[in-house]
Image 1 (spheres, helix red, strand yellow):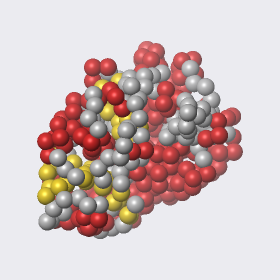
Image 2 (cartoon, rainbow, N blue to C red):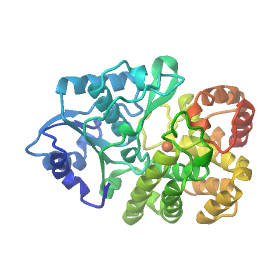
Image 3 (cartoon, rainbow, N blue to C red):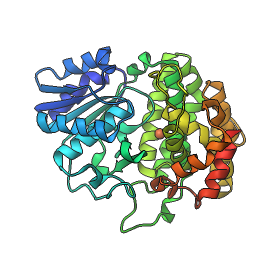
Image 4 (cartoon, rainbow, N blue to C red):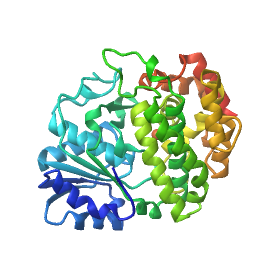
Length: 391
Ligand SMILES: [Fe+2]
């Protein structure tokens, strides 16, 4: 992990150190127009570079397939990804299926896919994030929409974790305020969910501990510091303060290290249903199609979860609330959302009480996440949580 202003200029040296001669550079059409793309291209000067810029904003099975076809044709010996979580996740998938060809469902999480283990190492991958949110540069997870199944699912394997992360906080200068706000709430929830997840000692080992192993002393380190950084810097980062944006970039990476190891739980499970069933909500700063950006969707369910689940880890909820400058965690998270103008109620993004059964049905298949909650989570529990989130 390399962090700091100017880190992008090091990508060529790092690529050579991994023995790359022909690089697949994965990005999207918007980032290709930004100065960061030119910096990466000049840093890779002298290497053979094939560019793929057709990454979809929320990747799908179809857009993953397109990237895999590109990778099979281009035959790179290494990958560089430059973009947000969508780009980095697409690079992981391209690398996986070009290196170990198989039908898409083979490595996809159960119950949607076959959840087969990845059979061996992938080609080296240097991930360069351009948003301060997903933490994908340090996780072994790739998320996508399986269109025909109307399901948000993913692939989770330590083999998917990029070989290196080059995190250059200057990229946050070009982010719209709304994107900093939504992705900042995503960072905060990565940290809070990892901090309140089921303890790793209580996760079923079948036959070995799962990659998302539950809260543990290592993930706690990143969580506490990320929560503290969000409390101190998120509001100023939204307002455009460059130093605060740099701190949020660091918080995003720390929270990524934590959740890539401990795993998130119910707010993220609820978020996939909230984002997947969007009707007409279309916030500024995003493509003007109906979308509840991931960070906003996560922040909508979080206050209800952190209120309902206090009893399972009262000390941790209190400690996290105090790091945020509050007494109770659920209200403290909602207060931060309101302060940075992120929707705080499900009604704000177009949902009513009539939608709750559908939202519950959309959340139940996220078993990988629900199993990481500090308690058993069934349809009744989710109904109560969505009702709370509504008002
Ligand atoms: Fe997230």
